[in-house]
Image (cartoon, rainbow, N blue to C red; front, side, top):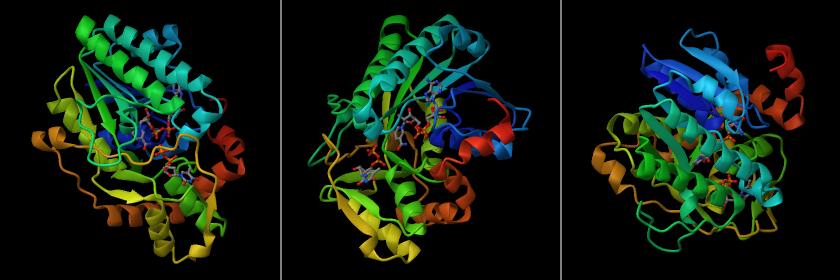
Length: 332
Ligand code: NAD
Ligand code: TYD
């Protein structure tokens, strides 16, 4: 099988590529990534010389390069996106360009190349917030910020290529991921690394917003499972069932690191901050997928990874990353 993975230099995409290479000997993978601020080839250093893997630097909104690069691929997995809600509130333009227009370019190209499977990586955030109960795949979409609205556009556009052209599309909506190599702007890596540096942890609003956490390797396992067992034209929720308030999460991180609660700093709330995300994952569980990593163990492993990989996140946080990067990877 020949995979065309977009956004493979980011957090989930790089974990997915490493996971695939471990599980399938006969695979070929092209990683197509623009290398934005969030793309980091260091995340793939351990497999960059694997003969089954190759890298193309490119934008998913670049139709000519996408067309040329996707040729001969069987499966497209689209991780490429602008992903940080706070950035989308500040400047939505790149979100619309990449998350919506980029997805359109990929879908058009996949149609031309007759790919056998197109996995659109969507998100639980497309449903918006829910006070009680959980969203299932039939729940209406109600995105509330430019990130989740752009992702909703791509999600429904992907579905339209199934409904209209019978392009074999599967759409997945995962909850918040955590694990190694997550860019230190998202809450878990930001708070772990700030605590390690003795800096404050900026907790938004009252800290009572709830997120459901999914260990990134469990997400990757679910994607491989759905590539084998999922039905085209269907949407699948992928959740961890680990709902926790941001305040409790922050306290857990501090307790694992043995750091004081005085590091927590309440700051102005995010605009339009979704209160709670919650997924009903019955559809996926009934197919036979099971989560392997329990939340406490996963969080401990994750914290340990950031403790051991200080060079990785310090380079990013201090901006020394680009200089290091050019030395390693030239002008890519
Ligand atoms: P990330 O920000 O860590 O990585 C995004 C990657 O996409 C980077 O490597 C970046 O260089 C690349 N990229 C951005 N714009 C591009 C473009 N125009 N062309 C090609 N490449 C481009 O993101 P992530 O957290 O790994 O998320 C991956 C996907 O999973 C996204 O689609 C996101 O919406 C979805 N998702 C993420 C989470 C989560 O908790 N992180 C949860 C559910 C769904
Ligand atoms: P984030 O990691 O940005 O993911 P998302 O917004 O996609 O869920 O944020 C997770 C939660 O943590 C969200 O409720 C906002 C909150 N948060 C903070 O309280 N402080 C922070 O510095 C960040 C980045 C997030």
